[in-house]
Length: 92
Image 1: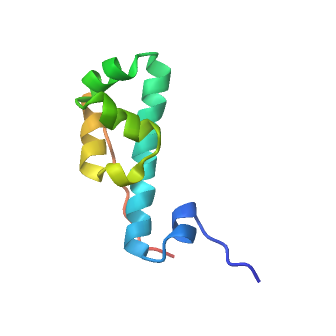
Image 2: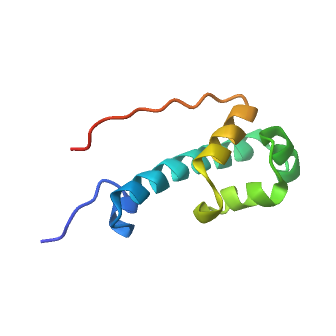
Image 3: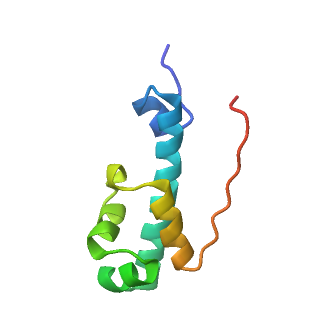
């Protein structure tokens, strides 16, 4: 029988805490990448609006999750006028 996972991070990472952190970071990164794409800004312009550097923004857009912290990603979204809400619940 094949084991089923709720998300890709659970399948790739045995450490439950790390899998949750990766899931959160990837969600924030996807929102930032979506913002940049929809804004039609250059990476340099978008980086200025997000309060970061163009190389760091490129890391986000390219999915280099190891280069991104939750704090940095939340700060970037906040600079662009987003509000980040968090929902915490007991795992099933």
